[in-house]
Length: 165
Image (tube, rainbow, N blue to C red; front, side):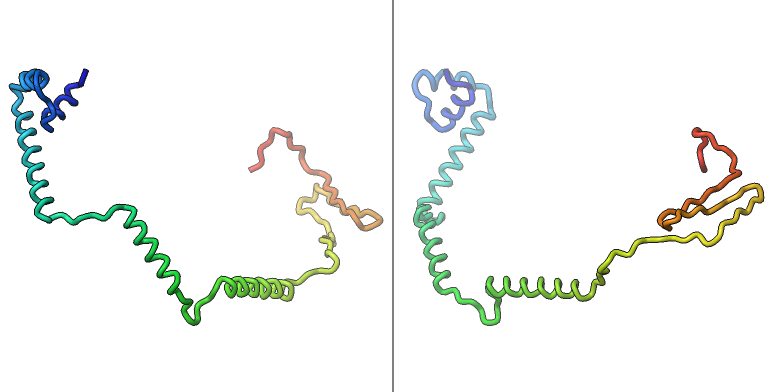
């Protein structure tokens, strides 16, 4: 069974006949918009047919012919292609890139100083004193000179829960 939309489209296109046509025309008898749509579609179809017959529309070539024509143009343009004088080919661009990389590596090697033996960081405590006379500070050095400890005595005890500001 056809839906209303299918019957409506067939009616507008003039494809309904017999009992089916009579039944559908009774169904849309009071609908003015349906008759208006049908008239407009028939007018548009007549307009398009008159312009197509009069040569107002261009005749389109088959798609296969269009594809062939485009491929022929591409092939012809590739055959006639010449490299412009003074332009760079991919080989020359690769060579120029390698030369730039070599210059950058040489500049890095020559301009960035390198230490043959890593220099250890060190600090030396020359004197120890505290501003408060109740605090005593002493520097204790390891006999091998590898470690120095700064011992501070006389500070007030701060609990773990104390927040420093």
